[in-house]
Image (cartoon, rainbow, N blue to C red; front, side, top):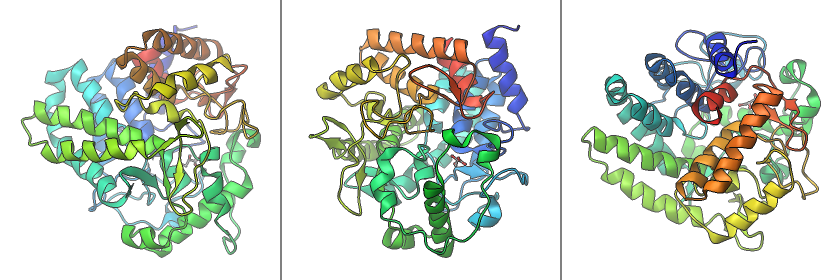
Length: 409
Ligand code: DGY
């Protein structure tokens, strides 16, 4: 049996479709935005040129308004729903009409640090594109400085209990008949329910009707949630982009101004009753009341809060393989259902980087070790049961292989 590093590299090569990588064959047959940024980091451990190709291909899908879509449908594939015909979006590459957490600039910085000379020309080409994407969030998605999502898929955490309140406010009447494909690839008990999917598709139909016009969506989309994933990840990405801009000799004053706005915004996600960072439904003004794995991205964003260490220790003590995507002591916790409980290596690495940088090194080391054990014992799965470690979702997963190569190994 090849060693773990070799297995991880062969997963990346096997999922390579030429300039971009699919998350896993079958279940996700296209280029996904944040998956690709993780993939680039994994590639950078053995092929920096290929790493930059991944990010450059992602930005071929950038819209005129700066948005970088969450899926690029480079080649037709009937095995996935909803495909480009359902989205009805008209960017330079067939795509979805929403974005995803902007981790690309942060991985670009890591890749640059691994090989400055081999990275410079790609970085120069990508820098203005990254600035434009980040600015799109600042222009269209802020609520009191926190970053909002307009669809559960946008945060990447599709069915987390964080959105339960906002999802309950959607009446999906008229969504019509459709055929899911995900549940033919993966055990339906590990995937979102029909209740969720009706609302996901209803929101896609709404965005399409509105021509994916951000001003119209701001007015008419009932789903608008200020999200810790987006807020903390964009804040971190802006910090990394400012540093890359300085390397390139660019004026970074507008990025620095954005950082100040986002720092203020992040504090609007502090739920004092929960004693945690939480999601906030902008339409209803209600808290989600959820301690999720995204709650712990504050350190990654460079933000400290004394309450979060105790919260982290409590959650970590409740399962063998932290960090669960939802609080195991909550009645909504579901150990195998996607973002309602499972542990995700990609969020663990971001939390781990944050813990390390904040000097919380015991916790950082422990998290890295349990994540490595999880992958070694249970494989390169999409996500894992936090109690037993059982593999869940898709297998031979690109981003889990990338986390192994970049951090866990
Ligand atoms: C899916 O199809 O499950 C994805 O998460 C949507 O991005």
